[in-house]
Amino acid sequence: MADIGGGFGSGAGSGDGTGGGTGARIGVSAETGAGTGTGTGTTGAGHRAGIGIGAGIGAGLRTAFGAGIGAGPYAELTFDSQGDVDRATQGTVARMEATDLLVFAHGWNSDRSTATRLYDRFFAPFPGLVGSGVRLGYVGVVWPAMRFSDEPIPDFDPPGALADPGFGTALDPLTRQALGQFWPGRRAELDRLAELLEERPESEAAFIEFGALVRELAGVDAVPTAAAPAVPAIFADDVLEVCRVLARALVEAGGPAADGGDGDGGEGGDGPGLAVGGGLRGLWGGAKELLRQATYYKMKKRAGLVGERGLGPVLAELAAVRPALRFHLIGHSFGARVVSFSLRAAPVGARYLKSVTLLQGAFSHYAFADRLPHDKGRGGALRGLQHRVDGPVVACHSPHDSALKVFYPLASRMAGDSAGLLGFDERWGAIGHDGVQAVPGAPRLSLDAALREGVPAAGCVSVDAGSVVRRGGAPSGAHSDICHEELARIVVAAGRMGR
Picture 1: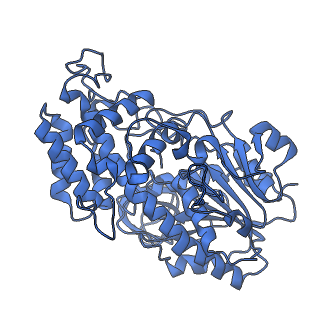
Picture 2 (picture 1 turned 90 degrees about the vertical axis):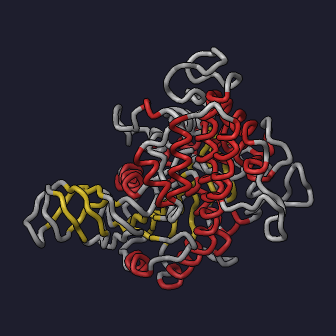
Picture 3 (picture 1 turned 45 degrees about the vertical axis):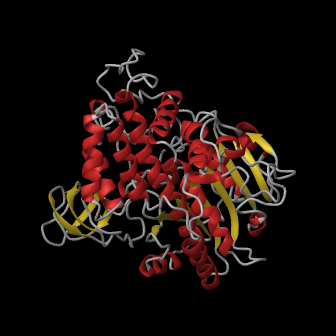
């Protein structure tokens, strides 16, 4: 599933260090790390322009306007896993000279470098799209997620830049490092998981051990309690069956999921990567996906928490200090969940939120519904909250997004939202796959129509962006193919910022 861990740092700006060299730097970004930088400068206290990528430790703060991306002024809002904001970053945003702030939250399969590049690429067209009376400020929301480095991101990962395909089911070094930061203090468990994924033993006992380790990392108890009445099916069901289902899903998503990269096809003889019906060795691709889904299970909760307890209150505070400032929220994948759940903290009748644009949102397409089609007594998690926005909530979706077409429904079921594990139906669909559902009167537009005619001034609207959101490899498909001027123009149209 495509989408910042606190471990890696990247940035451009002024700071101490040696331009074009390697060494420890603490720049204006206040980001500590040992890394390489390109640019010019003098030893000691020089000016370093360009991008430095290092193994920085900690959340990292970028407090200089324009640091890290081409558009400006730019600043970041940094949140920890509990949704607590770094007040220095909030203060920087509060001082930005702008009429309108674009506030963008990245998704879950990102590190800091990837998120910064995403913001740089996505924000690039905006200066040429807005009217003369609009002075934009650019805000990147940074929250702790993690990156699976063996998953391609269009435009960001040139050929040969990803983990060697020969890793197969094994964890490449960058992913192993990211998992260590995601689950600190669990080195022994992660080392054993990595060992099993590399060796792929033909042993039911090995799968049972693997499943138990993943369940422990995910923090679920096999015995139901009052606080956790049901263990998610992904952790409670037979681990071999779970791995078989996940391996089949990977094949459906276009990946060589099953045999792990050596091309032996397992005992089933179905060819490279397709031996999900053969020997146990062919199921380790599904086991690797089980580990990935354990991070999904944790990130889903974190994204909602960061939005509701972090971003939402911060935006309300900023609006109180700067009442004339207009906010336009943008979110990708679980970042769409972050910005959407921030609406829970917006006061009724507030007018500072002028638009919300969701790019391949990884949450339920029924989130804004007053009544769920399959349960008339319940509404969506965000029911009615589109009315907290003084403008439209635009959900851009694409049929080419394998992460949301295949894995989101499966993960939703596996997270305990269904009694069954197998099969797919619309009940578990993602808003980034087929748009807003069960909201009466919510229009559905093609991208061409939305660009030609504009979008409604309020309420939910779905825009099929499949004409541009269409590139990407397995297992996520086009999930991260969002850096297009057409989508920037949708944001401008939604916020009534155009010329």
